[in-house]
Each structure stands twice: as structure tokens, then as C-alpha cells.
Amino acid sequence: MKKERQRLILKIISENPIGLQEEIQKKLMEHGLKVTQATISRDIKELALVKAMDRNGQYRYYLPAHLRDNNGSAEELFINILRQSMVSVDNAMNTVVIKTHIGMAQAVCAKLDRANYIGLVGTLAGDDTIFALMRSEQDAVNFKRIIEEIAKQVK
Image (cartoon, rainbow, N blue to C red; front, side, top):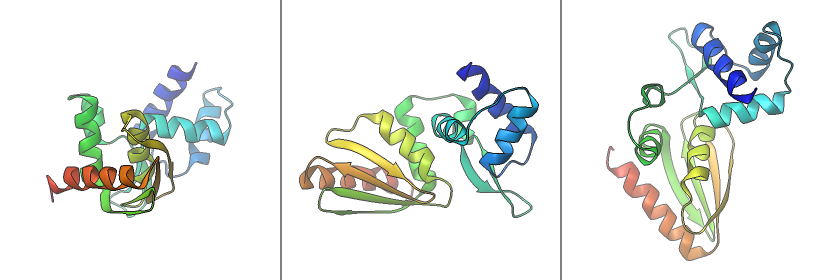
């Protein structure tokens, strides 16, 4: 059921300019699926969908190009999404804050959660900000350095 729902979400966003979770929910209902907003939110995170501005200046959901291709390892995919979306990174005590372009934080956060970095306890994403809780201040310093090195490779 979940895989079918997620496939349908990908089909919906590829065929329609969808910018709100409520619009996805409505389209799913038109296909006979009744789901909650929380379920849609989890699906968006798991699918690593991003919200970006289209040619008409409207924000809509997209599957990043590098994920559409399904080429490369999981690490390469994470590196690419981080490079494309990161604006800045900083740390305070045992917390690392990653700023992204608007609508990209959840996609980056989902990849961070799956990457199993040493010392990473958990993450929390908004629209353009990620808080990564580390076990220690030294883990935060090390993690920030890793993120900066990844971002430097392109900038």
C-alpha cells in the first residue's frame, strides 16, 4: 500500500504543479486513497521531494534530478543533494545548524538520517533549516567539518 501510494504521489507531482500537501491529499482522494497530512508529510520526506520555484514563479514539489536518474551510490546522492541545497553550516555546543535553500531542508535531513554519521543522535528540519543533535561538542565540530568539506567540493 505504501509503495503504491508513493508511486502515485510521484506520478501526481510529475503531471501536476502541486505546491501544497493538501493538494497531494486531494489528488490521492480522487484516486480512492484517504490519507492524513502526516502520512503525506512522511512520504514527502521518504521520497526526498523538494519544493522549488517553477518557470511561473510558483513553488511546487519535484523529485530532484539526481534521484530521478537512480545513478550513483547513496553516498553520492547525499553529496549531490547537499551540494545543491546548502547555504551555510555552523555549530553551537553539540548542535549543528545547516541552512539550505527554501524547501530543501527536509530532503537533506532525510539523507542525513539515513547516513548513520558517528555521533549523530537525530535531526529536525524546517523549510530551510536543519538542526542536527550530536552526542558531544567534538562530534558537532567534526560533523560541521565533514559538511563543509562536502560543500567545498563544488563551491
